[in-house]
Amino acid sequence: MGEFQVFDYMQKHEYEQVVYFYDKSTGLKGITAIHNTTLGPALGGTRIWNYANEEEALVDVLRLARGMTYKSAAAGLNLGGGKTVLIGDASKIKSEAYFRAFGRFVQSLNGRYITAEDVNTSTRDMGYIAMETKHVVGLEGKSGNPSPVTAMGVFHAVKAGLQYKFGDADIADHTFAVQGAGQTGYFLINYLVEAGAKKVYFTEISPRHIERMKQEHPEVEYVKPEDIFGLDVDVLSPCALGGALNDTTIPQIHAPVVCGSANNVLLDEDKHGAMLKDRGIIYCPDFVANAGGIINVYHELQGYDRDRAMADTKKIYDRMLEILAIADDQNITSQQAAKVFAKQRIQSVHDVRSNYIPR
Ligand code: NAD
Image (cartoon, rainbow, N blue to C red):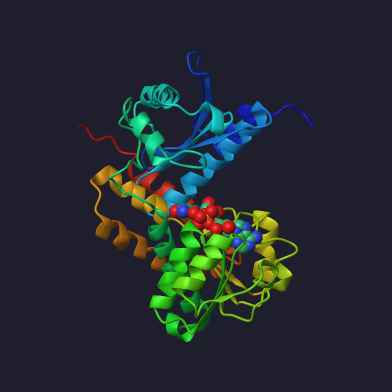
């Protein structure tokens, strides 16, 4: 394989900026990628990962930053897309000084990039970053745990999928299978039960999470992980790991609607999006369905109000219906339609800003 050509890749996918930074006192090494800031500052979490090599870190941060552009645009937020990866072993490198050093680099971008939590970073770490920059969200005592809001967004997306498929969004008329009862799956199941779902099945691999569900909702039926895809239900909701929809699982699916919280749930976006479409399955694009978390954190920038964050999250319902309709009209996958929808919004805002207004 040839050497990765950064500028070719930036040009092809229209990235604005890629920043490498290093701090000698703490050994901090990282990359921030800013994909697009047409709608507003690039917001995206900071991930710490022990990448095998620098190229792997670069490819990951570029891919994740671009995903954030589409996610925020489709969510109707005035945010662009960005992301940071910090290279190293999270169990060894984290300290106050390490995050403060990082906070200073975030500050040096002068608000073009706002950071937040991601894999291997916590609200406490964000607190250290906040000592050096105001361009950080997800702080303790502010927007709090995003998972209940993410799950609420998925709940509205599920209703949109049902409306689109059956013309009936009433949860009480339908049956569900949820893969993963962790942070988001747990809350989703709670909302489904509260709304009177006809039947809910779930699967898990964590004994603690299985036990919690059995204690709190004995009526929610446990099935083995390998049995979740083939259940005869109306909605399959993948809320565990990315790549859950693939060559092996898609042929097993009986549910006419697939909608969950898991990010990058299609192992291969184009191929597996098309497989679902060919099978006539309504697939609610992951980054639209699971946008509640970013909507929640966005509200922190405006002075946090949980009710307003929840009200904005509810808008996922209408947005999802619009995207599913675009997919049908243009005969493209719903994942592609979601990108068309996001790009249209970016383009339209870009266009209205073409005139000069003195401030
Ligand atoms: P989590 O780790 O709390 O929950 C995932 C659960 O899935 C775990 O309990 C795990 O035991 C279980 N699991 C893993 N593999 C499984 C398998 N094969 N079969 C059954 N269960 C399995 O994570 P989460 O925060 O709920 O996130 C779930 C997905 O949603 C992730 O892809 C995440 O990126 C995405 N997401 C989460 C949020 C959020 O606010 N938490 C926001 C946007 C997207």
